[in-house]
Length: 180
Image (cartoon, rainbow, N blue to C red):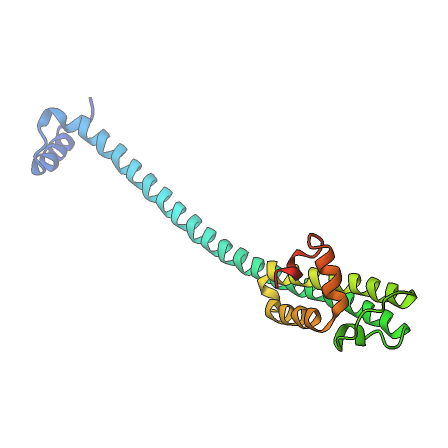
């Protein structure tokens, strides 16, 4: 027996109000309990999913900020390397007075001798440093220096017969410079 007559009458009256037949009252009560538990579980799962998605959105935003910071640092490092390379070449030029004129004042390359060799070696070093700077600043937009490097490289090519000579003799070595 499921309960007293009075309890059964109360249950029947409740379900009769909703249009449930007498024969299904016992079954419907169990189904209702299961349905309510299922509904509560579904709502709890949905709430958990929403919280997880909000947390994921917050993590994604933080990851985007971190990537931007990393790219900015990479751009700065690329510039530092290119500038350090140039600085080393300039120090080498200081050891041999008059070298600067071959790269900034359109002084012709000597026909022969040790001076010619020094100029060609410095031209190769400069071409390597300029190529490195061009590639780095093009590949890392956060450096915000590609246009500046391109202008500097163009200036060097325009004002240095030795730079034009080595880049034209070896086009595969300095593709970025030749593309200017």
